[in-house]
Length: 295
Length: 241
Image (cartoon, rainbow over the protein chains, first blue to last red):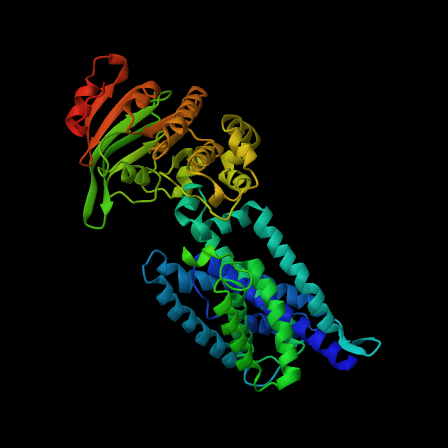
């Protein structure tokens, strides 16, 4: 029994970390631009495959953390280019939300198939940040899992501090809340949009790299986390990044519990059922501010 | 000596609908200028064109000798032409303190941030009290104070105020009018739209009447008998006694 509880806890924490990284990026783009990025999941795969390729061909003997760091830098450009090509041409259009559903879906297809074309269908894995397992009493977990659980809060806290306490972070929030006023402040709005995409791509890429050494990498490795991140963002309250992070861990634990209780097969449906019930009781989401939906 | 702001034959509008139909006026160095006239005749459009939010279809805007007709809003703010929009709600989920800090976004304003902040909080002690409150919890008057404070944080060379006392109680109106007078006396040049012409007379050396997207009349305050009461009667049908 202690075994089961421990494994549910660990699995919940790992999943929660992953979803928190994904959901915070998704939520950041949503609150700043008011659009939903369907390609957010595949950015996870892009990050993982970048790290894989860099570690294979550039730094074959280096510790895997180094290629991961380089791949994260590359993700800044991926995010900015993504915004420039697929979102920027449509700013100011009344149907921007609809158009960007199409363009981000196009981006998703393009990147997924691009990864498939470049790296092929064979399953891949990147090395663990630290090999081996950690055993505390009856609990066994891999170092990679523990590092995932440990790194994530630091990354999220850094993101949070950046958004709250730097002039650039404030500017990003300002652009999301009142674009015209932000322009009159002299804030370069489009640059903030590009930066928002860059940050969210880095967060997704990091999630991909962490997952890429726990499970196998595939071009579609991000699609399930994206659906979960969407649940998380709605569940946590649209427009609240803090709420998304909290909800990510709640969903992570729920999923771990459900996988143990009812099995992998029924877990997604029951997750959706729980989400629907929560939204019926609290339409603003678990942590969302009520007034956001009425605006 | 070169003028601070020169607007020549400016035309702008929304789609095919032309709101400004060749507006020309100027602001000399050291003076404040007022605009008045009926609502819906292009004053706000004029300001949004000056601040780069709307692209003019014809005409030129020259600020401190530089042509800023096609400049971006960020560039215009950097040059010190600051537009305080009408009834701006700012950022609902940001605190007053954060908003003031963010308002010093331009490079030039960053250097003077501490001095500007002291000036603003001295001018509106209420903002200091509300510093950690979110903007959406502010009253109309406090919001307007914050708007003016935000404009000042940007180190303006010319600050555009679009009906700064609109919709406020007479008492608050007076508080803000006094504050705006203080701002002008401190050396910040203003370009103000107001319905209250008496207030403009106190503040400005020249007034322009904007009507049907054009400058219908220029009033030099120093000349004394300019007949603005006649203008009021013509355009608003009221006699200012």
